[in-house]
Amino acid sequence: MSDIWKRSSNILLIIFIAAVLWMIFGAVKALIFFSAVLLWMVFHHVRHLVALERWLQRSDHSPASIPAGSCAWDDVFAHLSRYVRQHSQSQELLSLALERMRNVTSAMPDGIVILDEVDRIEWCNRVAEQHLGIHLSLDAGQQITYLVRQIPFVEYLAARQYSSPLIMKQTRLKDLIISLQLVPYGYNQKLLISRDITRFEKIETMRRDFIANVSHELRTPLTVIGGFLETLSADDNVNTGFNKRALALMTEQTTRMQRLIEDLLILSRLENEQNKINEKIVDVVSLLHNILQDAESLSAGRHQIKLNIATQDQLMGSEEELRSAFSNLISNAIRYTPDRGEISINWEKHKGQGLFYVQDSGIGIEAEHIPRLTERFYRIDSSRSRETGGTGLGLAIVKHVLSRHEARLEIISQVGKGSRFNIWFPAERLIP
Ligand code: ADP
Image (cartoon, rainbow, N blue to C red; front, top):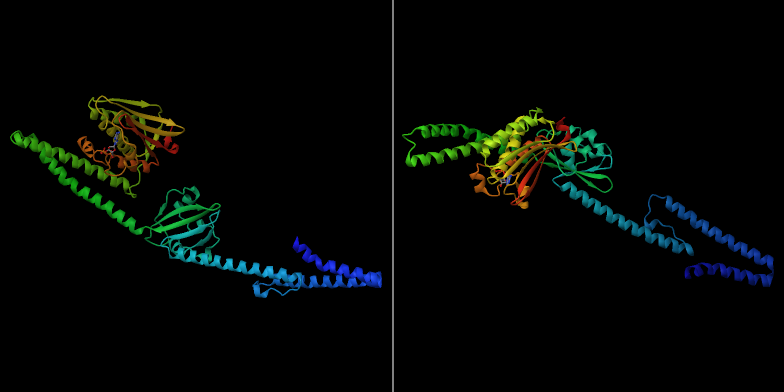
């Protein structure tokens, strides 16, 4: 309110002087005076407006370049100068923060690409340029799939599956293996983080090769030992007294080692990516009837085993691998279910997906162990596993077989009541 009075005081003074002039010199002189003052005021404002407009059109908007004003315009230009000074200070802080962020991301060992909502490159650091073979100065604004054309990458980007990374082996740089991870942020924008995992992959390959070679090398000597033990056990002159006990124990341990070696070889075959899955149409029903016979001979009448077939659908996959996965789950059910327990083997179809499951009334599994069961050699009770002929690799084999068939394992269990192992097969693998 006080501002309005301050601004109007000049007008009121002029009106007052005009009124006094009217009374002393008459209306004409008073009006001439009033018009002259108004004209001068209009000219004053226009002059300052022109100065303001010229300043706005300049490219340099520094506080020093703001024109000087008089009367009311002095205050306006002072406010403008303060505003410009604050603005340039915050802009300086922003560019400092941006510069710092760029320095940090450039120093990072991982590559970072910022993608907009339609996957165009907005910015990337130098490591990402090396990993993906792009050049920011030339490629900014380009669709990333025009530059990184590998099909797995294009599919990964389209799938929008942000939870798991993509391992890419055929990059532009020879011998480079990178892991790519998409991270969504802001409004439909994405960060693409690339990491050089060449060394890890090499170590992993060495580990796999080492296990495969050792297992392979041990197989022949064990077969020879097993053969001699069999011959000696059959010889009634040798197989007596202490020898009998020693031979039985040696045969048992040799068989255990042979089982272990066989499981290790199966695992390394499944892990080997060059070892492509040998797919064909698998008649699940007849496969399960077949496995049922093995299960009954393993149980030797100690359990009640039922086979429930609710669908005749067949599966696209490797018969050998599926047999191994199903048999492992069934043999576990038999080994971890006390005598007279019930076991059911089931093949069903649910919402288009294939469901194979084994249910037992056995010892059950505590919830804390369930997430780790598919790790190699993870056992809840090692002595029980060994006693029943387990190698600790059964569920690891199941996990690998399922990942090669895009299938999913689900474990539901209650201690003392029993367990249920579900395998869900995708609809695309079912053949009605
Ligand atoms: P193992 O040869 O020891 O059975 P697996 O990989 O097949 O190895 O299983 C890992 C562990 O999971 C087992 O040692 C056992 O403790 C537990 N397990 C697997 N299946 C069952 C089941 N049906 N009931 C209870 N525990 C089970």
